Image (cartoon, rainbow over all chains, first blue to last red; front, top):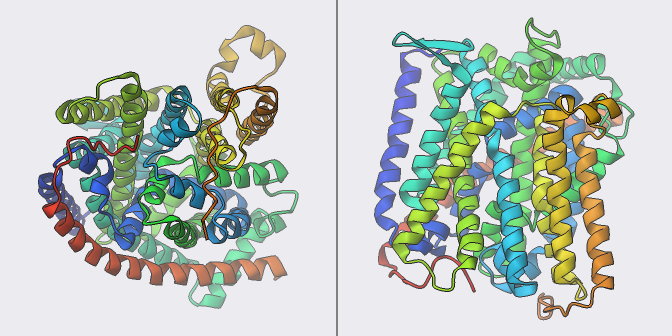
Length: 521
Length: 55
């Protein structure tokens, strides 16, 4: 364990501050609207700061730094290419986002009921909840692994005479405060705690980036030369040029861009900001600002992976394989470069990044399950008290599922592939959003088909890869699941787009299309 | 060092600097918004029919 007294003081003080804020904000939760949407009182800068915290978990840190450790700057260019399309299309022109805000809905499934039917609202709510929960279900597990490497902890720890699995212990340590923040004050608490966490997290990210660069060389020229030489030796030209053979390839590029476009109208935690914006023009500007802001933070994490390659090298330690190394490389970097005394701030920044994301997502998916699935079956609405109790029970249930998933799931591909593949489950929601907003012929039955395709194809990939070898007729057909994650994801998106178009043409359903583009600037 | 290599370094440098500045701006702006947020919540009334949804 690398922590010294001052580190523990920082950790305890920071946790105390957050606990105090959590308890103090409870008094402001008077009704369900306060619990679910913070009473719709969040202004722009607070919204941007708070959402910057829930946009990044330790999983995101690992996912991005893993990519840069394996592919150098290519991941950055992949993201840039996506921005090159998304920023003009969505951030400047306002494609999708302005019309969505013009509908006036607070959540996506509400829009689906308006545009399609209550049934589509329920199915979409289920798809979004499944995708969202599976997407976040690996967060605590890989965060635990990451923190163990930073702290230099073994696989098993002994406490009061009993032996505990360190990974699962950390999973519980991360889940408990996240559930606590979500349960105690709902979205009011999440907004405030996320703001505090965002500041601490930013300090941690900038501090590690600075220390990592300093370790790579004694001057700017030195740093640049060392990074260039290391990337050239270990990866080659594919470390800088996205279009080289040893880089991502066309399937990943198209899948990444398509996911990011459809993700604009399928990811509820981001859409909460859009729904809460004053008007469509403000929604567009917030998207533009968020995208550019997130890009800069992403680049710090790209540098972590690259600096890890320079500082710790590519030699795989005993007991690991190449993918294990790429996953924990930035943790090994932090372990090496951040001195005791500062490690406390970095650690608490990372833990806060994790808990802020987990608590925001726990609330988001619970709200969708309760408001858009369970409530849609009831004629008479729940009372305030029952509604909040149901939300809290759902938060707890999701947390239990995440713990069980940590035991069941074995990582077979990169974190980024897993995140984008599970994201595809709710990309179906994005597809029916865009088609619903822009094409008057999109029908209800076509929407169902697109949602189901985007649920079935990625889930088949996830589950069959886990059990391929234990199913005799599958393993006799092929040694392993025939598609990579990005191939399954792109296949789902393409099939869903073809299906929604074809089914809409063939179907005789009447549509409830409203052109929200009229009157928009 | 080829075009892609030096472009990578310049791109990273510029955007990381922008992010640092923007983080400070967001933190300061967020602080003032936080004060207004609590003031607004303190004076708001409970709407029994509002559960955060729009029907």
